[in-house]
Image 1 (cartoon, rainbow, N blue to C red):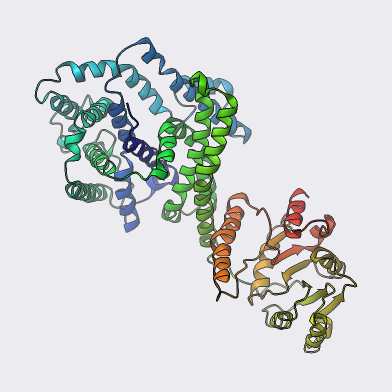
Image 2 (image 1 turned 90 degrees about the horizontal axis):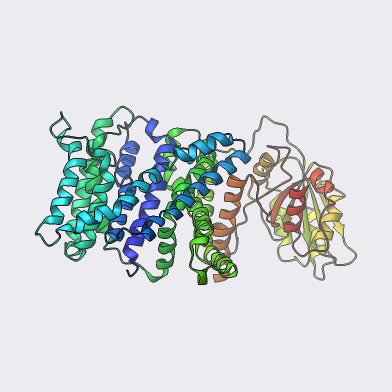
Length: 585
């Protein structure tokens, strides 16, 4: 059968919905009292997201309603079992490395009772459904020439599984014994959608959207009313076998079918669709790390729920990247011979990860990290005036900076910090930089606060900084470029971070381009704010450290700087080099 991109979109949406539903489970939403707009909002979102498992089951019915019983078909379950066992052991192994794993005997027992991977209940259900599918297809195709035969099958399946949650709301009216068989009902709905897809697609998009919004509004209000002033009530009608979920599933599919698929997304959707099982199973591992981190960083439940639009993409992209990679590895033995060349597989995987997934995933991580970092620091104070001020040494290396150096030095006098010493090293400038330095020094009230150091020959910024390093008398040294201006409270912010832990060797500032009148200046501003600043904030939040300081403004712990031998004069980028050596030390 020709690949159907709309089905890929359906399965990709389903796996995103699954990870999103995990947010409600792991963030603490189900422990939150529903009494505000925030609670109502997430009840509405849940009404859509809970269609995740039904979407998978409907897709299964759509794709497999023509399968017949054969030895080859039965053996087709093996890759699923291999993926399940392999990922369960992987999850256990990684958790064991961080001290959270169970003993091995518990793990083996957990594989057989589907508990080693806490999300593997779906595998237990799917194994039985898979083996039943050829028999279900016999039922589906037995009397298909009879008018309304397929409609009768879907109606009876719905009557037994979905309608009890509606008709039995105020007392038992019809049998509800068969509700647990909802996977079969969704399978038949998928088969029906495949068989009559042309007729279904003729329904106008206006009617579909109207029905979707109406159902969403009614179901959200119904669940809000049932849960008001208490924790969310997970009842039959909003469970997988509930009538609400069944109706929303059909409407979501009807909308997804009408979404045009851009060519650029076909490959990504195919990769996600193919790896949905491994992404789903591996999310047990990624969720533990992601939500462990966010619960620590955002202990307040309401604030954590508010941060859902940031947390969900982080959880999804981490599970997707790892799940796709693990899926390729586990499914490698089942590839056709011409596809089993290791070199081809490695190259293909590297290209896929680097070209397609890496930019998307990293952009989510950087953007979410920057947002959370700013949010976390929103109440941070510039300075604690009850503490004694530590002396700070400001060091500037200048080479041919006659146009800016005077203004920069004079701006340092306006800093909101009382205990300073300033060292400026003239790196054998060939213009009037040195002359201007001595002119500016006369204007300083305390001539000792500004020390001018002259290089006899031009040796570069690293050498100039090393010369100043030997002269500083404070514990902390701020290095800025000779054309940079500091905000008034910059020193207290930087010092506050640097002294917050003895493990921190350096902190960097946030450079902003001052001359933004030219196109180049505007592009540089955009680069700093949307790329460099965002990446550094995300690194600091998620990793606890940044990969490199910005040489334009960085404060060092002098002791740490001297321990690594100062600045390396053999490299062009002294800021990157000194960061890595500080990390190693």
